[in-house]
Length: 301
Image 1 (cartoon, one colour):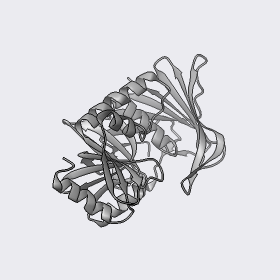
Image 2: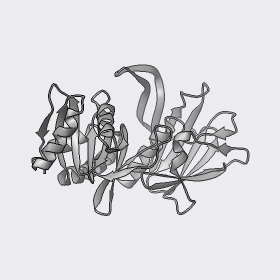
Image 3: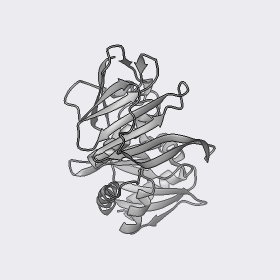
Image 4: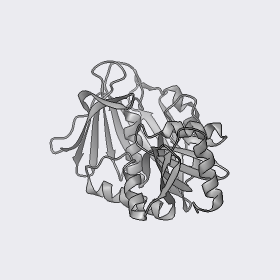
């Protein structure tokens, strides 16, 4: 392919190959996210090669390559991806660890621009513009550009109500999504969500992680900060506590005060208008009936 459009979380993203010998391809997990070629919110121009930081660019963020194994984080390499800033331009350099060795990519973004540039190294004529970790990096900076939220969380919809369960790795996001799935709920996603304010409501969207995913979304009616417990228990939070707890589960690169301020503003709007509580739960179906009973009793209203 020379070009295509994807619609992810209601962002229309257009990818265009700039080289005559370079074709684009994507993994199967994006098969249901292709969209018609309309007016794109952002266009990504894909080039061969690597774009180096400009001389005046300042390194503002650096991340090592860390893998999670059995809920343990292990550092594999000191080098993974790095962010450079030069005035309004941001350049993200990254290695591409899951393919051939010594391959790199560079993504140049500008929050105020509608066109970004992506450079991918390697002799292969086919380039995957969303090869890990480019998928997460691109989506994160799209949320930054749009004033939206990128969060580690499970989202479900049942009886016209949308529940967001937020938590870091090991807190039970996948477990609780599986329990709701067995109970007949629509699982929006079990790990990575984008939340946007659309038509007066906060709406959560899935992002492509697994094969054969289809676009899913639901308004957010209730937020649960989850953890394992010996019994099912809901603990209500104040608005300030709710904001800080939700923020702790957001995907964020806190190298710029303006990024922190923007995220704080949108999270304040989300948590001030959405009931938020801590949920300690047993990893069985009893937590489902517990939440539904609490809601129906009016104690969660």
